[in-house]
Length: 424
Image (tube, rainbow, N blue to C red):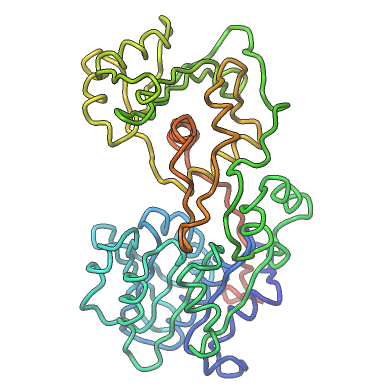
């Protein structure tokens, strides 16, 4: 393999804990900044190397928003690199445990998901020699504080990694602005800190994002979300309905009783999904409500005899889901993770993976009216109005197009004559 190439900032992450480093006395490290900037790879590799160099027979914690995201973003990248360096790695998935033997020492690494406030109870009562919190800005404060409190072994350190959120976010105000008082090393990354990215790839990502996502994910700034959510969307992006044939059909639904119900009909043609038609019913404006059966009738009319691959429905609409199942529709509960869903929808619109057709007047109307809630006291939140077609579009993107992003590794490892790897 090629010899590993690291940027200056990545080398600082890899070596900050070593005796010769000017940061050796720091209790914590915080790496924040742009996406694809190489911070996760450097952080994860350094965490395991530090644990193996400094401890024997100890427990460590590795935390992500979910265990699945942690495995995808950290473990699948880092564990093979450790093995290239000569480490022995074993995993007990039922216990969420990874055991690493390296440099003559063996330590245990426990995996946790910090999705909501209840997650704090999962980590109580455990003593760690160190903890790595990946995507820490997505975790509730109670979980992060409980995780930090578990690190009571002499020599323990805290490792934080995240992309920026808003300037009122608790982690930004408490840890990043307070890094010196907390004796933490803070390193802010850009894409130029990842030597594996070519200029062409960096330019592609710069074109991909706009508005608040550009500020945060490209420039690495902790900025407030404000204005239109899809501020890049223009009338020129609206398209006529293409002619047949079509490869696949899907309907996405945001269900409401007092609130509007929105359904979008999506057709796949030449690897692009088109929102060709829609149904939108506002019970307040019409001064009457429809039953589940009437909404199911409306969906049947929207499908117009087409064979639907699936119907994606708001997961909270239990009675409507059941009404559709009784009519033998193939139904799926939507992924309702709002902020990641908005980002993925913006990506899909900008890349042309989804297109809105001219007949979808309510969806196009809401695209202009869908805005960030600037009164949300530091949290990213969209205003809960003009959001029903926006929700059904988001359900479609996150459930059908999926969550996967193409990973970029920041290093490779060359074996020396001894068979052991070397970093740099």
